[in-house]
Amino acid sequence: MDTEEPGDPRRTIELLWGVPGPPRRGPKPKLSVEHVVAAGIRVADADGLDAVTMRRIADELGVATMSLYTYVPGREELLELMLDHAHGELPGELPEGWRAGLAAVAEDLWRLYHRHPWLLEIRVGRPTLGPHSFAKYERELAAMDELDLDDVQLDAIVSLLNGLVAGAARGSVDATRAARRSGMTDFDWWNRSAPVLAEIPAANPVHFPRASRVGATAGQTYGGSSDPEHHFRFGLGRILDGIGQLAGA
Amino acid sequence: MDTEEPGDPRRTIELLWGVPGPPRRGPKPKLSVEHVVAAGIRVADADGLDAVTMRRIADELGVATMSLYTYVPGREELLELMLDHAHGELPGELPEGWRAGLAAVAEDLWRLYHRHPWLLEIRVGRPTLGPHSFAKYERELAAMDELDLDDVQLDAIVSLLNGLVAGAARGSVDATRAARRSGMTDFDWWNRSAPVLAEIPAANPVHFPRASRVGATAGQTYGGSSDPEHHFRFGLGRILDGIGQLAGA
DNA sequence: GAAAACTCTGTACTGCGTACAAGGAGCGAA
DNA sequence: TTCGCTCCTTGTACGCAGTACAGAGTTTTC
Image (cartoon, rainbow over all chains, first blue to last red; front, side):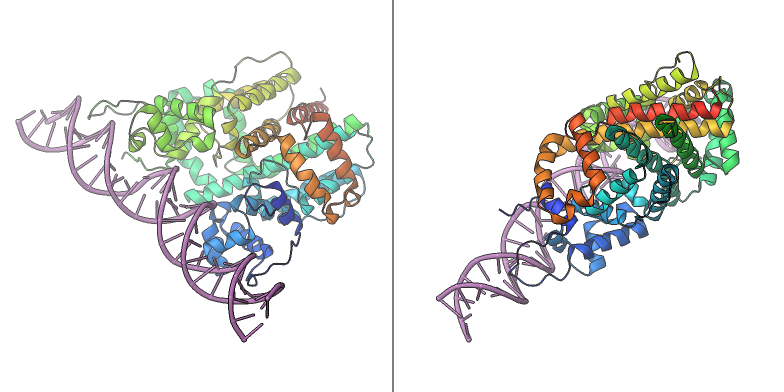
């Protein structure tokens, strides 16, 4: 019973954990799952997730497009493998103390997302059950060993932190992507947009006093638009404060 | 100088604000931008963002595909119009008190995302400069009128809250989407995955003690996997606590 | 009227994921 | 050794996406 259909959880999990499978009879494969995943990551790093097409990866490996389907059930599974593989780049150590630990967890992920911005574009409907994603979760929980919280709270905190990092990172990454695709920097774009907006009576600052003031301040402070990195650090501080209050630590 | 090229900020902004434009000479248009946007939203609500194709919308409106390009420069701009339009569904009022105000802002957005899950899939590289998105921002800031914070802090808080809601909502929405696409509920999926995982030595709980324990607890508590709604409420509480601490309120 | 400007439409191009069938390589059994 | 099964590899092809382009028809302006 060798179910090879795409969308099968069994197959996906076995690929994630590198389960060898029974001895095969035909010609030796030219490649391996690892090769395909590595090529996928190479392409994604270079040209973004949209460039990760089966044809492009096959080209990269000097192989026909359809050969890839020998190693991977389909594109979706490949992306999941790439995701888990990338999680393997996260460190294992943790600094002393829950606050420093959680901060490190967040900062490491922040850096990972900037090293591989395409991670933020991958939509896996369900949690990835791969080894490195497990290790990531384990580490996130380990950072809170000293806190007296129940399991549900721990899970919620992990989710909260991951959401913060992803959200903020998406901000900076989306901007970069938009700049690349449109050939306009944030600055160019704003200089083109602001005058148009000024011509529209309904968009007059009087109607949006707070938005105009804060938007202008944030724009000036960071040169064009709000700064995701500042938002990230600020949000992290607030969340850690909130956790400290909850745990009485 | 009537730049109609897609990707032009001027055109997009004028569409967002419904700027009428000079009197036209040819035959009267059968439709309007509003019709197209409404059809887009109808399709997205019914069958998700992937179903929002130019052909499908044209069918919906009883019109040839290419006619849509008379009203809208391209698909990307259409999505941005749909986004701003949906933001128009958010209420304007605010309850008394910053804490209740921010909570309402978050809860309203949470509900909006569940009414229109496709909103979470739209990737606009830059902020949407439409009337309803402006109003949304203005209201978010208004909720903090009584707090003594500077503009940069206000902006960061808005971003933090929006990130929380989007992140948590993505959790529940992604699960629903995965269930629909695969024909498996979370429960089915887990029942298929768990045994496979159990067969893999490297995935033994001894190697991931905390992850196994917490994962099991969270799964049991909510029936299959972590509960995004609980994560949302929990995260909101922590963040509001953190803000209170910062503002000394 | 005639001409210009505009809407609408059908066709067609490129690029995507991948189903399918045919060709060739290597192993196990005779 | 040879047959035959199994598996890897490949080229072709299908359906669907966004949208460029050219022609036909309609309404306004001169």
